[in-house]
Length: 106
Image (tube, rainbow, N blue to C red; front, side, top):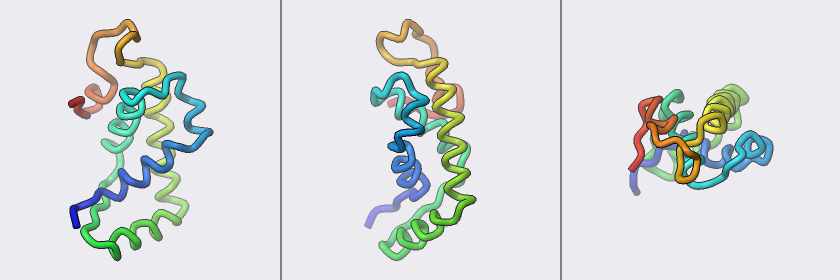
């Protein structure tokens, strides 16, 4: 089984929340990836290599503090990206918000 960053898995799930989606005027892959990269740069990774490890992290996710931390970082990142989208047609050819936060764009 590959190594899985469960923080990323959980953040991807939360990013689908309709309330969080309302913060983003654009839902293209680039904007969603920028939001995810920016948020993950501010959250501790939680790696798992087994199904049991993944279940442990998912149970930990039920704790209000972890969910709140992920939601807070995603919200802040969504607000930044919505203010400064960096994708084709946005009219801004500078670095993306994810790069500004140390993220990478492949």
